Image (cartoon, rainbow, N blue to C red; front, side, top):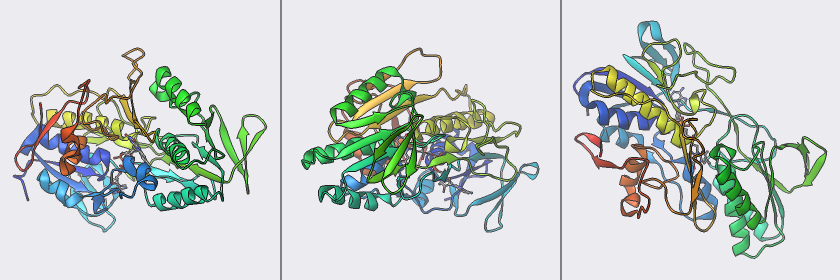
Length: 403
Ligand SMILES: Cc1cc2nc3c(=O)[nH]c(=O)nc-3n(C[C@H](O)[C@H](O)[C@H](O)COP(=O)(O)OP(=O)(O)OC[C@H]3O[C@@H](n4cnc5c(N)ncnc54)[C@H](O)[C@@H]3O)c2cc1C
């Protein structure tokens, strides 16, 4: 479906930040903008749910990009970005096509760097079946000692904690008390980014579940079955290492980048030094990589663009608030912390939802949109209803209307 030609916004990347920008922009700017999404994959997959994959028979199903762009009356160009020629306001794609723009939004996520050989590195792709196999081997008694190793540098916050707690619950259910689970992390305290009350509660939870926590620690593999813990001379015996990739940026010719090839942005999401170019999500140089934060950056970008095309709006800046759902095998824990530096100690952990819809992926527009596709969040009981503003979805007309 084509909209009346307006200001041409090209969004590169069909992940969390790309889709949140697209949904927010359509909701805020209506037909003042003509939106094109440039993304190579057929489906958006919510990777935050991938940690459940080894433990449930359900598969993480994606949503077709064709459907999302159709719902917000945008265009989808199925290809990948090769370079940006900002002087002439166009990009070149891998298939050598030229796409013009008035405003460009880069939401290309991060690239993965693997640190350890012979490990299972969990990045929300096809690792679920290998992990399931490992659980079978645990059940059969073939392996007993698993280390969850968080890499140094940028990495996602929650997945290894989810996996360790879910694995501990699985062992408890199946009566395998002799399994040893260790979580090694460079963080000073578990999930330190969420603040002390959350860290203290997560530490207690790990203790209760029999997970040994080694904080301010780095693991050096000494094959075949030992990890050396640095600093210090400690060694631990292991049968299997579960880790996740270290994240680095993607180098895009024509775009500035920092030492780790992340794109430097200001709090409105402007790419430093380039008018009309924005970036959001894991691709940017904001040090914490998380889907909820990617969505908040995308909202700031969408508001800035909406204001620039004449919408009467006072665009808000990126004011980072972490929201995370920690899966424990029984009641999930909802974690929240305003990390903008303006809220004092705002660290909260609760067994009750702290935002709506209470999904692992907290995006103002994307979370309700994804829930609307399954109806899951529509029946949610929300005792402390607050924070992520509820959004009504009226597809085909104005897309999303915040209330
Ligand atoms: C196992 C796991 C569990 C997680 N759990 C949580 C959680 O509980 N809560 C949470 O908030 N976050 C969680 N995260 C993190 C979250 O998934 C990421 O932070 C989020 O996906 C980042 O969004 P993004 O849009 O910046 O990047 P991505 O979602 O990675 O999207 C990047 C997009 O850019 C596209 N792209 C890349 N290069 C190009 C190119 N050259 N041209 C065009 N397109 C390109 C990609 O194809 C993709 O569509 C988890 C991640 C994993 C792996």
